[in-house]
Image (tube, rainbow, N blue to C red):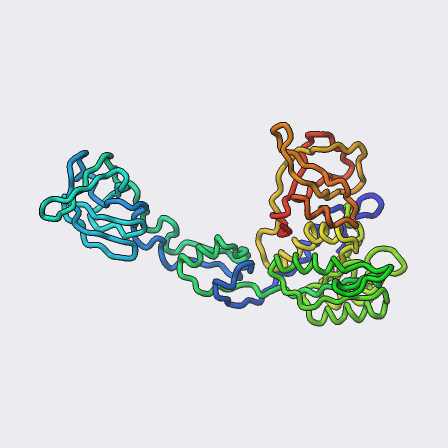
Length: 414
């Protein structure tokens, strides 16, 4: 499995992504969860409705249900019954109306509803309430037909659907108390580097706090993955091999950050090649060139770069789609939008660039404003950005050029 490469032996972003997706083996195991606990999980099988929604025609308004032919403007009709939501009315007596409330079932014999704002009422000497209409109704006015939302037998979910709050509402509306979901994808995270210390520990000279672990934890949690282990690995080949083997013994996927470049202390690439196979190494992207993909003892391995922004970008644009494919999701792309550039770039870079940008309105037009520092070591700019702007390789940028923009909200990183 070899990537088609461009000049300088770097694999293009498109070819690298295609290779990752093609290699993904979706999980087959499932579990049943209470619907309330299923948010963010992936449906394991197609679901159909055993009922129609709504089960019967109901009123869309507070008002009066009647036969449209009985209504004459300014001629009162008597109220023969009162129907509230959850109640069941009687057949409508000819020449009368039913006081009805939103969601209440339409009584047999009625064919329309007049909202109460278009009526007036008065009581006669016998205590009978009469209704006068200022607007003539038409058949079907303000009635929600039976099955308007969901027909009996209709498909309400597809295998591979992400369970969102919207889908949860639909599944609840047809009576699903439990739903079959793909089991959680088990991910082990390895962070390499002698320089790393955990937040809360003393950070002596030469050390830095481990931000990558927390970036990856947040991104994996947003995807519904199960982080089964997180290991801080020093720059030592034996320890690196041992950590990879331990991760392979319990994980569906191994993610690492750092150690896949060409430095003397980058031991991950060599260890993966010893313990398994490396299919892909180094992409023509910026940030994130030293990305690796392979397996350790048959367990998929994705090696992300060590710089914080490179970790963020490569996870979002490469690792995330791969993990989504492993989850069995049928939609793994992220919605992008054409946005005019609000900056100039006179030199064309040799790699596809994913640039952190904010959207701003200038002279009535929306444009992507480039964050000043695009260094792969600068993560803070991502917190004040709205998303990533994709600048193709070998492309100069002028003000107003239309480029592909992906919001962080679409990437699960908001």
